[in-house]
Amino acid sequence: MKIAVFGQYYQNNTHSIVEKVVAFLDQKNIEICFYSVFYHKLLENNVELSNYKTFDSHECLKDNFDYLISIGGDGTILRAATFVRDSNLPIIGINAGRLGFLATVQEENIENLLNRVLDNDFSISKRTLVSLQSNPANSDLEDINFALNEITVSRKDTTSMITIETYINNEYLNSYWADGLIISTPTGSTGYSLSCGGPVIMPTSNCFVITPIAPHNLTARPLIIPDDSQLTLKIKGREDQYLVSLDSRMASVSNETVLIVKKTDFFILIVEFPEEGFLRTIRKKLLWGEDKRN
Image (tube, rainbow, N blue to C red):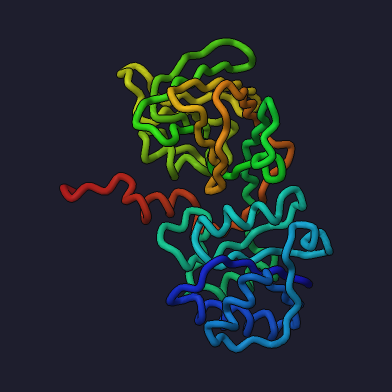
């Protein structure tokens, strides 16, 4: 068996988590391959590691890996998805962050849940992604043109709102006059979209949600659409450019550029365990339904 280990940051509990993961995998004679940037960051922070192999691009992960372990928060898994891409490599998220909707394995359960992985005692959650094309083409959006959480368009260098002319399957929907617009996957429904008034959606639902950001119209509400829809966006504003973000990756785009948003033809696979499922997570992390009167 061969497992990739990915991370972005060194935090207070990173040291102990890495030690537990490495000790477990070494004991089981499992080959370990670290993300090179993370590996050198660990060495700089005096984490004792053997001379493990490293990888530095998504091409390297096509070489017969069984799983990718992501050590960090949900943002780290979003970044890991840009390496996994269409390789069908399942991601095991170990939480070293705060919320942990995707990274649900807690430090105290690492050995137990990794043993469950080896025993095939887990489920796979197939997460839909959303992709972006621009016309004319934008070089900053071409290499990694997909997002696991959401694609967002927003104003740039101005306090003035922008107008987002929106079409669904070439049929006119609305011209949003707002600070921006979020097109979220079910996975991303508990992120930025939720903060802007969007609904919480079960992760495996076959839909997207369109959520306006601070619209200047009381009737502009979030809209759920089938995930086989194609969205066309045409943005206008007082400035020459606006911002487009795919998860945490951002690019400046010229006014009048046409954006095409639709579902990707591949999924990201997330390893899940019943005791760390989505419903338990929203109760624990969002205090779902909690009422002090009860």
